[in-house]
Amino acid sequence: MKIDLDTNKYFYEVMLSIMFSNSSQNAFDKLSELQSLERKQLFFVGGAPRSGTTWVQHLIDGHPSASCMGEGLFWRQLYYPLTELVENWRKAIQEKNVTQFSHTGGYPLPNEQDRDMLLATGILGSMQRQLSRWSDRGASCQAIGEKTPEDIFLFLRLRHLFPHARLVVISRDPRDTLASAWHMFVQRHRPGEDLSGMMEQFIRDALVPMERAIRTLFSLLQKDQDACLSITYERLHTDTAGVLATVYRFLGLSDEPDTIHASIERSSFSHLSGGRERGVEDKKSFLRQGVVGGWRNTIPENMNFIILEALGWSFPYFEWKP
Image (spheres, rainbow, N blue to C red):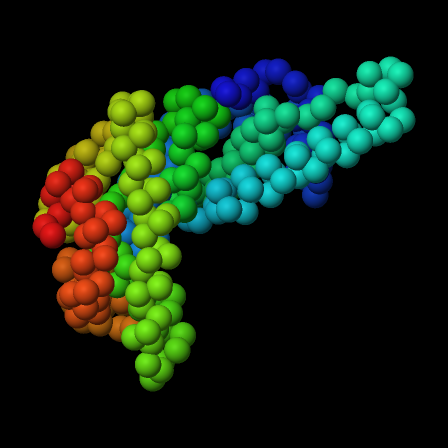
C-alpha cells in the first residue's frame, strides 16, 4: 500500500495531535511538514546485528547533506505493536457489531491500511524530530534516513509506504557476524564462565533470522533492484572510499573526494573507539575488534560446518570464502 498523505486527513489530525500534544503547533501544520519531509530522499539501512550497520550509519551521516541516526527500532517497537493494536481494535469492534449492532450492520472494521497509516506517521514523525536535531549544520538536508539492523525485515513494507525510499543492506560473513554477536550478547555478560556448551545452540538459533535476512535481501534485489543497494563489510574494508562513493550516489548525494575522505576519517575505527586501532581487541567495547576473518579465534571447526551447511549457498554471491 502506498501512503497518500493528502487523504484521510481527519485520521492523521487525530494521530498527530497525540504525537505532538506538547506542541502548540496546529496538527495540520505538522501534517504539512510531514508531507514535505516525505518528498525528501528517505532511506533505511539494515542488515544482521553486528554486520557493520553502525559503520555505514556513521559514514552516511558524515556527508554534509545527509542525516542518518540510529536506531529508530521501527520493526520491533512500532510495526509489531501497531499490528497487534489494530487487530485488537478490529476484534473489539467486530464483537460489538455481532452482539449489539447486528441489526444495523455495525461499524466499519479497521484493516491493514489503518496500521500502515499509523506506521508511516510514526516513522515520518521520528524523522522530523531527527531532522530538527540536524538543522544546526546550516545546510539543506538532501537525504534523511535511519538504521536499525532488524528493519531489513520491514523493508518490503517500507517500499510500499514510501515508494521513493532507498534501502541500503550491508552483509558480513556470517561467521564473523556470529563471533561478534557471541562476544557482544553472551560472553561479555558472563565473564569467566564455561560457555562452550551454549555456543552451538546460540549459533543454530541465530542462523534462522540470518537466513531470513539474506533471502529478504535477494527478494528485494529481484523485485526492485534500483531501490536496494547491497554492500558487504569485507568490501567496505578493502575499498572504503569506493563503496562509500557508490552509497552516496545511490542516495543522490555528491561524492567529492574531500567529502568522502572527511567522512571516512570521522567514521574510522580509531576515531570511534577513542584511539584504538583495528585488531586491538576490547571485549567490553561495542567496537570490539573491527577485523575481517576474526571468527577463527572464536568459532570451532565443527560449528563452522553448521554455519556452512545452513548458509553456504549464499557465499558465492557475497564472495565469501568457505
